[in-house]
Amino acid sequence: MQIILKEDINGLGYKDDVVEVKNGYGRNYLIPQGKAVIATPSALKVLAENQRQRAHKLAKIKADAEAAAAALEGVELTIGAKTSSTGTIFGSVNNIQIAEALEKLGHNVDRKTILIKDTIKEVGKYTATVRLHKEVSVEIPFEVVAE
Image (cartoon, rainbow, N blue to C red; front, side, top):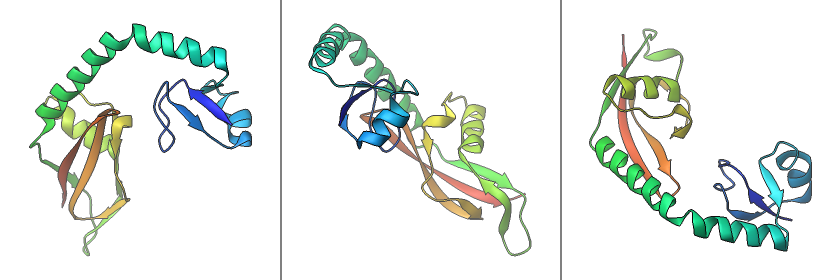
């Protein structure tokens, strides 16, 4: 079943993308939650017209995202965490702590745009990906140290 996404969904696509999903996922989750609509011919025409009208706005949004990515380039974070004697963290380091560390440095980044591949439960060096736009992302290295 083809659907048009109304918002960004991790692992599936971005807003206004036309994607193919299984019937149950589309009809039982995405459409009732308001995250997507069925890609009928008339809906596709409306989408094309909306995208044509928003083209200049999208270019400005992408330029802003590229400027933010340039500002984040070269930033290295150090995050302190309570650890045991073996170097294991009590709890884990997640995107909220990375967003707070970036905010302390003056970069306002939404925590939902920060992706960490694995759970971080030990002291060491890691990288996080900040997706500022569907075509703009930046890798941020960070180090977890014991407090």
